[in-house]
Length: 330
Image (cartoon, rainbow, N blue to C red; front, side):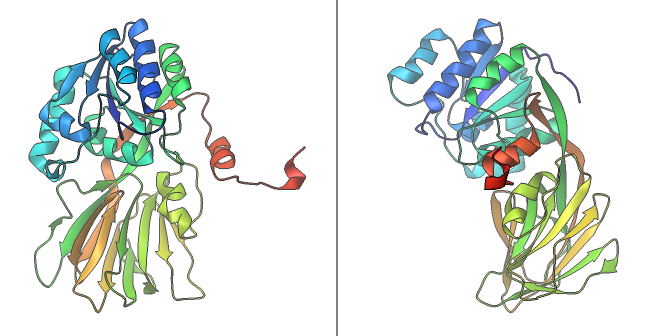
């Protein structure tokens, strides 16, 4: 882990009218400016990052955030997010502004969206939680600015997954979309009422076929996301493992599986439908049911800013009430 000297930051939000958003933006930016950190607001969310809709933040427009009742850093979505050209423009904006990092104010979904644009460029992301849960965006707005200024944080690396199309009866191989990476998980899911079969191989060794609604391949970071809902194990984020978890399996003897993160995983679907659903974190697409998908750890990792006071075990007890028991209240 390393400590990064922050001089310039970009600020994104998940929604201008979210409860507490105005106060969170104002607290982070005003404190940063007071200590000489240059701040740029990225208007219209990811659309603004791609198209350079940037505003330099100062006392006047930060005050305006509160006065008008809705933050000037409102969000907007764009199909351009999914194109290579759009991603290139977003990275160019970060380089042009000389950003040392991006502060994503929202929830884990906002953090995942931020990771898409900066993971491969070594730009760190810090999450400020205004969402419902927040394992990736775990920091309270009141804790962020002072911790950064005092150097009470580290930059940690989180493993990313990459998925490739190995081939199908209807086409050649290739990447699953223009940005074939995920921080939490990739999933395949049935697209109709019929059950889905998934043949899995790990480093060329075949597992028994999973018959289920779908299958999750997740990183250790994703163990508290979709995998948790499917009965997968919780692992510490620094664990170098991948998790394979069936979704609503129609078997009494099927359990989630933990494999080393060096594993090469291949998925082949068995379906009555022509298409199956493929998800990458918070992105969804349809692929041909005869597609074979290869999943492995990406060649780069996400740089995530973690406050020194944060603790994964404490987060489990606070957010998921882990170990809640009257006998433990001593």
